[in-house]
Image 1 (cartoon, rainbow, N blue to C red):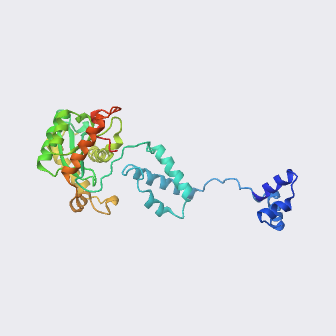
Image 2 (cartoon, rainbow, N blue to C red):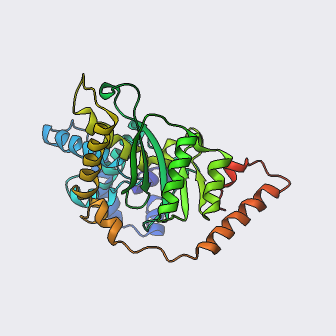
Length: 318
């Protein structure tokens, strides 16, 4: 930069020594860098192709990022991963690699992305149906219906059903709320978006949180937990004919393994069940929380410029 600017000053007819005096650079220093520039020593060397060892390192990091991204939210543990590879790869290259992986698996940061993170058990529960592999059906379709704790991903209730839909889900959630524990917030897909289902939650002073349409990532924890179950049942292969009772028994074994055997890094080495049983519950005034949420939603819907549907208004928090 010094040499280039000095040459520009000369080209304009200015005195180079005067320019150097102004910026505080000695003539000998300028002469040294001018000779280095003339010899081509200041030019960046052409990029070399990566070695086989470097290619393997980048491949290993990419695989670990992909594994994490399907189990975590947007940041998916990049901090601990960077600490593991610090000194083996530059920070800039690590960030570039993370951006590449995000784009590859379609997990780029979305503008105004809806993300709900709950830090205590029993603050939020989520409901979902999942079709069990058709290779195992005997006499018709079978579905898993499950209620998940959104903080620990621990399964609170589960069952195998022959039918799905809002009616089945409403009856199942009714049993869940009667037996307890009651969450403060309940997440669910739009297939359960009925007046009956919403009124059931409001009866127990639970704030509804319906997932927006075409946005499966907002219920990503339940979706990923369902995938674990699908993979478990898929290992039994083709041409199986299981009764509902047999599927329910195997589901008990599957959930028991996922919740009570596998330790989770994101839970500091605990299993889902251990975290759910031992983590501190949130100290929240249920009546106050519920009344504030209902009043805020009502105020939104009364606005003259309101464009929210009654369902979407439950998702608005500010």
